[in-house]
Length: 263
Image (cartoon, rainbow, N blue to C red; front, side):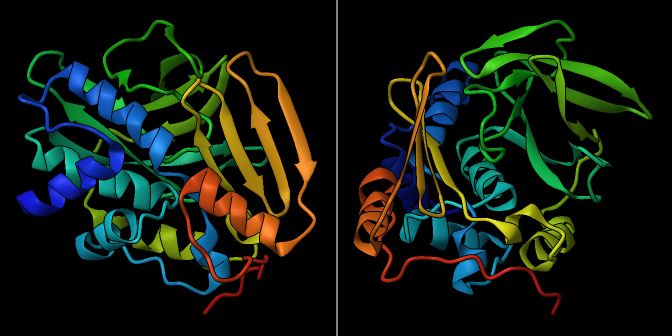
């Protein structure tokens, strides 16, 4: 990333360039990212390719002012952090589900080293998750507005990330490169077995600590205390207005679930 693109990324987040790559600055950027750049899988259902390289990620997140899923969001955020002087490693995870662990390279998270606080796990691409980065070396409870998190040794050097006592994903500690995740991104974008091909989602944290989520035509708002309200949107115009006003995404057509098809 050149300085111009770094500045453009920071403008999207409404953030100033930090003087040093500190833990405090990382926490601020992390929360701003979750509030500003939505977790969304619209590209899959709009027929747009998911491309994991620096140019494509920055074009989508910074220039087009879109969101993405884990590979895109954490991929782009990692580029930003590295340009600001943080030491960043891409880590591969496998999501815990009803049928056990997901595929290899199921999830991408970041290990970030700051100048003052050691290593942290940054993750702006898991939907409802921690609002701030987690301390990598801490094995006790870590309180966060998104819940109580804990890192648990899982054998073979892996770590399970728990939220409120429930395992979320299993994280390898071996550093990976962004191209390593292309097969996982392809599978999630095309396989009928992927939950991303089966449904639409667009979600972000709100400024008061709640959440706004649009799943198809269902708009769900959650306040900071966890109280939820949901309503169905009737017209295409209503749906497009929520995408524009609620998420900053301007669309010419309403996305519809296309399903998955290998190819």
